[in-house]
Image (cartoon, rainbow, N blue to C red):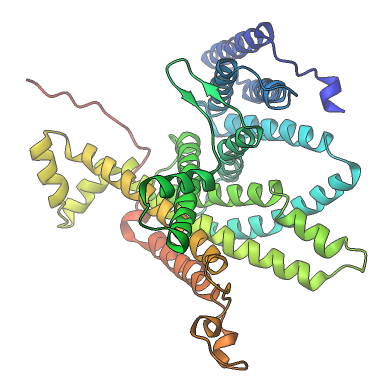
Length: 450
């Protein structure tokens, strides 16, 4: 077993050794590049291995221990994990980044598989292969609008998979009942549903019962959406830094990140594809291929499209922010004006480009969070309503046999996100200013004389 081969007990000496090794490898790589002797593959493999073993060692020592560690020690461990995770997204070339993330994911996957029973490994393997097929189909479908290098596509896909790490790590802290102490402040992670319940019961006492439950559920989905979309935004920005030359590039990178995120989510959550394999393929009465395919298709199309739409829209606004200067100048040449940003620039004495960048990023994150949380809420809403209605007929109390019972409530958010989302993203791809090549973005400092 992998844990027996690589001892994962935490110690300050080993942590210091890992940090020194990372610094030495970085210095070696820089020196080799200065002499034009690329060693990116070896550097990426070694660094990916070191970072994976470091993160695994820390998480196993603190989250896998029988007794809960002291809060300030656990807080220090969380900060160290965050720093190691941040080190995965360095300012390297496409191939270096892709190999590093691939090696990291390989060791993490190997560790997960090593801890599983043989039967569970088979289930995981089948679920992974099945989940990979729709992920590749989604990539092919959206990449036809604007060709990208295969290395960049792989890099964004790996980055999307790693974007699931923050919410998974937070969930592990919640399940352990861990308490963190960062010396300046203390923090006890709570489940999203419990946090929303406390918010509603503490601040909205006038909305008890059904209203409070609905509001608490919606707020919990908003919190989840904030964490997931901010995580996808962060890895998208760090992984794509210096590579896009047009807004279309950023949109496509965002879509591939979303596809990678959805793939990892489908594989890691035991209730999704692994659950479908157990329920429909491995049941004692015989395999139900039709039931398996229908559930896999529904999950692959609907939930993947939600991630694609929300993060794709975020990618559009991020593209506007990245190319704020050339986009504004190009718009002005075509008679477009930006009165809101111009007025704010005069009042705040800030460059119009800076305000445009901040405004578009804010709009993008808000739009992504809203699109994501609203879908999750609409899908869950029937379970919260009295009688758990599933069709239009259930809502209006139609008699049995009425055609309204044929119209499922899930149909409306499905059509809106799948058909409407595909229409929105296609329209963004075909806009003139999004197709236009602006070149690699260059950020300059603006100094104002007093």
